[in-house]
View 1 (cartoon, rainbow, N blue to C red):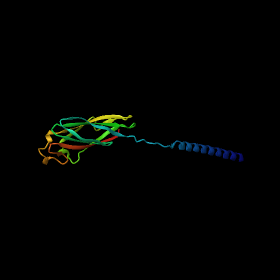
View 2 (cartoon, one colour):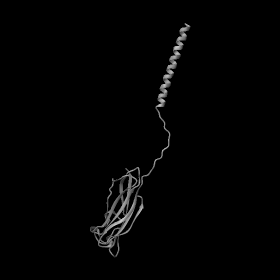
View 3 (cartoon, rainbow, N blue to C red):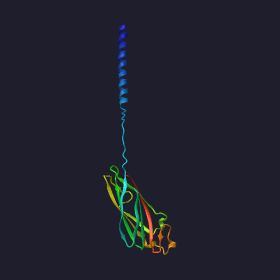
View 4 (cartoon, rainbow, N blue to C red):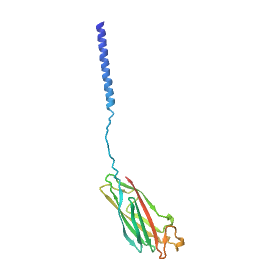
Length: 189
């Protein structure tokens, strides 16, 4: 009987050890399925779309540029004088995507006419070479030439200064002047 009891105790201990090994193996397997990686990373924010250059490309009639400047990486200001209906001036700007990682999408073009209501403008401004939604590809440097043309609209010219809206000037020489600021909103594509 003692022998049987020792044998039962021995079997019980072996079964207990076997179950402990099974539970330890299952626990280790569950524990080791969760992988933790520690490290450091650096995100480079190289999204950079800039205006490289701006210049007068051409003029028609007696139109003259009274100023053009790159205000910041996303904004330009243009100003011109016009004398006769149909006078126009064309500026060319070079936009550059300096990013090596991100293509640039033109999300929005914002026109800012200081002191002039949109319906009261005598000068029509148009952009050629880029539209909202256009992509400028990333590379060491991808450039896009954009033309901006301003034309004195003959159908909008008032007979005298009393009818001119705020922000549009007409001096004694019948010179119509206007300044516009254009902001280009680029986002990563």
